[in-house]
Length: 64
Image 1 (spheres, helix red, strand yellow):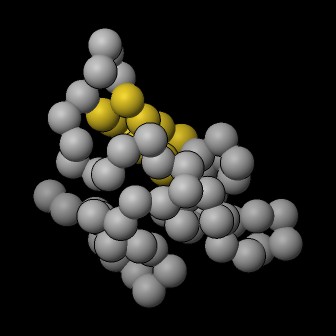
Image 2 (cartoon, one colour):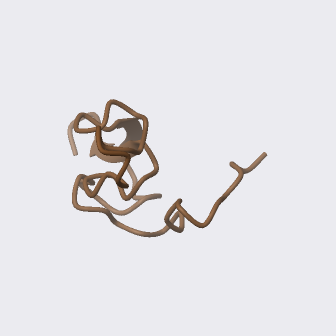
């Protein structure tokens, strides 16, 4: 089942500044954005620039 999308959420293939790799890259996984704590918003309610408003970042896992 795919995640619901909204105009505030970036496309699944978009690489955001906080991502170590593009979504779907081998040996990567989703993690909570360390800047916004997973909310996708900053304290002033602006969209988090680090994760693009999704609340998640893509990180390398394992020995990649």
